[in-house]
Structures are given as C-alpha cells and as structure tokens.
Image (tube, rainbow, N blue to C red; front, side):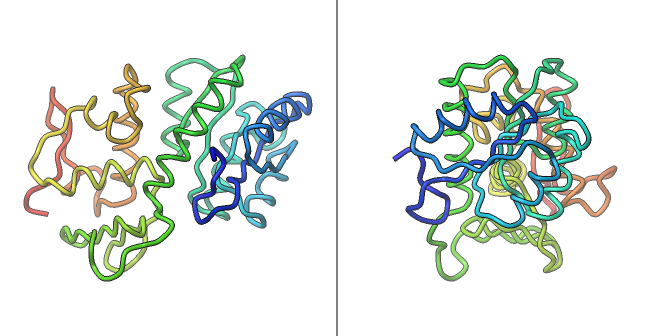
Length: 244
C-alpha cells in the first residue's frame, strides 16, 4: 500500500498547506484516492498547530501565503514539531529559492503548476527516504552506531548526538552524514552524495548537496567556519575527516 506510515500499518498522514482552498481540495481528493490520510490547513499558523498536535508523516507546504509564508511556517514547524519531511509547493522556480528552501530543511521542491502524478511520485520518494532513515523496529544494542570524535551516529534510530546532546537531522541530512562517516577519508563527489541521499531522479541538482552540507556543518561542527568532520575536497566533493 502506498500510504503506509513511518511507524506502523496506518496510512501515511499528509498535511496539505495552501491558502487556495481549491488547490487543497484537488490535492486532498487525489491523495485520499492514493490511499493516504490527509489534514488540511489554509494558513501557516493553522499548519503549525496541526503539525504539533496530530500525527503527520509529510507536509506539502505552499511557499507564497499571506501572513505567515512558507519559510516562516517551516521554521515554526521545525521548532515545535521536529523533523517532519516537507515538500514545498510554489510558483517560484529560481535556483536561489530552491536552495533557500533546502537550506531551511525542506526535503523536496515542486514548482506550480504540477501534475498530480508527479506530486505522488515525489511524495513516495520522500516517504521512502524517511522510512529508511526511521525504521519501524529499531535494532537492539549498538548495531549501526558510529562514534566519530564527539559525534555518535545511531543509524537504526535516526539519531545523532554531540557530547550526548541530540541533534535533529532531516532524513536527507542523515543519509549524507551516515555515508560520509561510514568511510572516513573517502572522497564522495556531489553526484554520488546526491544519488545516496535523493536518488537518481534528482540528477542535475548536484549543487543542492552544497546546501545540505552547509546545513549539516551548522548542526554538527564545533566551528562551522573551520570544519573538522565534513571536509571539502576542492574540485571533487566532500569527505569525512580521518582524525575525527
């Protein structure tokens, strides 16, 4: 069933956020037919309240809304509801806007107008990544735990700790840091990291990896301006520090 939730057999619950009720209605009807459960919000503030109080597996978030726009809504959701996967729905198509959305923690970005078939494919892809990063039945013991310097990466539980303080990562960020930390010293190209984190359907967006790396450094590095964990290999890509 396409709509399985991350933590059990219930249908995945998708929160649709858009100030245009006609768009919400069309998307909601389609997703229900595809087997998903849905919530709807016509404003950013309503979306923040729903995300904090109801089970939500993924959020479809409009960028341009009056009052609290999509970026402000995403910031508030991250603060109150944690790392729920987010796909931006927007008329903006400039690369700088896409990178800004990714930098703030969005998992994907689809430009209006979009086909419902494409939207469904993007939702499935993000939910698959999220499910792989958050297994329904975590392993016992220390299997899947990497200790790198002051970082402890628990892959089975989708948790990263710095000096025992938990760091919240998006599913995409988790995949990147796990790939790098699993092989310290190995250089990964942007394309390789893109395939690991997002899949082949995102070929051509290699530069978006730079934004995810910037985000990761802000979260895990003692001094993001002078990283010791995620290192740049100029002209090639990135590697995890061998001395970390």
